[in-house]
Length: 243
Image 1: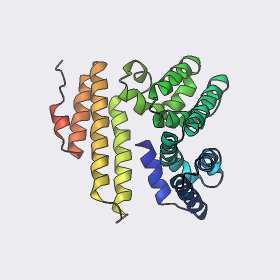
Image 2: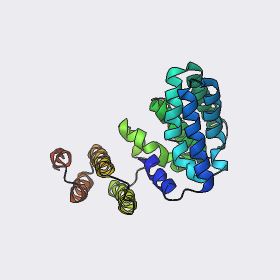
Image 3: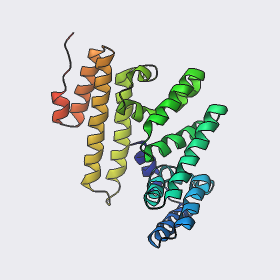
């Protein structure tokens, strides 16, 4: 979801440089089609290392579609998988060994998500939380989806704050995306359904978290607020214990 929000900003603010980078990726995909695997790999690595020097609008693409394309190459060309893991490991080591920026952490989370190894992101976050709690707070935004998916309530409770406030943040994100969609006639109903489903899933995660910390009132309030936005049986049927 985070990547989609950033991507929408990119769609509405494309510059000439951003168009050049899109062309660069299209040409790289064509190289994969032509089985020019070594050349394509070099270009995917370059894109991760240098695309933001040309346009910050590539932030969302860089951490989502570009990595997915790289992974598709890796499925056909093992050296591409090795290179992706090496990039992930190098950046992970840099975070642990020095006070590297939050941007580097977001890179590692995206790489692990692409590699289907979210557990490594969680392990890294645990290390940061133990050694540098302030830095962990700045990393929270990038790791929270993985933590909720893994039901790591032991970590979440130290960073999420008030569950209702967290829901309000999710709703603000949802409203922002919907407002942008209304101004773009090329966006269909499928995306609306996707965002509705995402809101429901994130609401259910917050409800379960609230129950786990015995905050029943927050669980009920989140369900009510979510159902006011999306009528979904999953929200209606979720079991919230009485006090």
